[in-house]
Length: 440
Ligand SMILES: Nc1ncnc2c1ncn2[C@@H]1O[C@H](COP(=O)(O)OP(=O)(O)OP(=O)(O)O)[C@@H](O)[C@H]1O
Ligand SMILES: [Mg+2]
Image 1 (cartoon, rainbow, N blue to C red):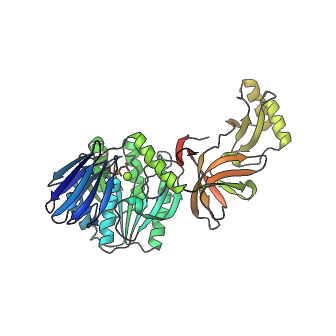
Image 2 (cartoon, rainbow, N blue to C red):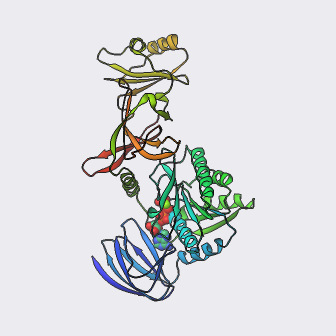
Image 3 (cartoon, protein in one colour):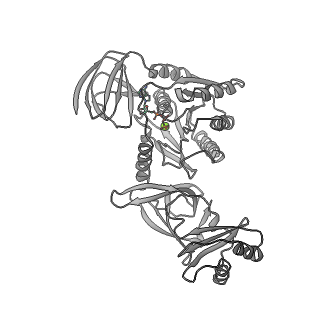
């Protein structure tokens, strides 16, 4: 640990890479548009770097942890960003702005800068956090609308207003859902009379498919301004998207990604997600829900007419299951015969397939083993068909007709939307952890 006192002249930029903490003793600094005054204190975590812009001559006391660094520069990307953002915010309201860039390019920081500047100019400001992988406002797997009432030093302080579940942390196969959710939250922010709406997107921006996905988002959202962040590993993508947008009357602005920013490793990203899950599961309890009275979306295994005991016995014979094995559940949905089996693996040979065809017609067999559902993240629907909370499935007991979930939502639960990320409660650390993905 090392302690330092730093004096900054007006407009100097102090670049801090964590882990570090500082106290602003004298003067005034801006952190992504947040205007800090003494005795402002802040901790820069190990996975973060920050630019502090001195609004006047300022003095700071800094404590540097292991691996931390500081550097005073006269010019930084943040200066260019600040000037551009100030100009953009003079445009007619309501103003929709979208930020696009690869991972670790500065999307969240630019979003924060725009939001703080807008709030400090007196505009009603909201943020749609559409980065399902590295969410800042809501829990991962959700797109969240956050409303700003005052400037914030970090997006995690923004109050969530409405959630829209996507169910996964990677956008590749769910772009339609992502776009629909953004549009839903956009309508909501208009209802709330937002004057400045900033949409932060996910970091999937490598390759043509990713560029196309962003183009589609822009096509549907019709933002007034598109900020594209240029980082050395996606120069081509930036150029292609910029060229596309130039064919139309879209106000696209390319900005440089900051130099020497702290990049986050896969495990750091996961830890950040787990920290967010834990926050949204704080005080969570087990809740048993009656399958009969529950509307479940996005889970084929719970659709169709469930097999009764006799039908399950017949299916057991058809599948040539060993005596000790048991069929917990079976249903036919969209020509899929979905079977949950306990006590062993099912061997599907041509005989079995022929018998299935003879009995059930042209169906595809999908076998799930016991506990297939354990941990699946869910969005909780209240009586107004609103997404009111997050949970995950502990167990589906078909015999008793009960879905057991873990959640801290306390209101009436009328429905669940099921995602494909598996979560678990870690008793030792009292945290919620990710332990895989699932799909049928
Ligand atoms: N001008 C700058 N100087 C130093 N660090 C900066 C600067 N701008 C942003 N950063 C830091 O760079 C890191 C990455 O920025 P940010 O989190 O905004 O990127 P991102 O594109 O949103 O990343 P992700 O893909 O994880 O969502 C953060 O630690 C941020 O504080
Ligand atoms: Mg981000």
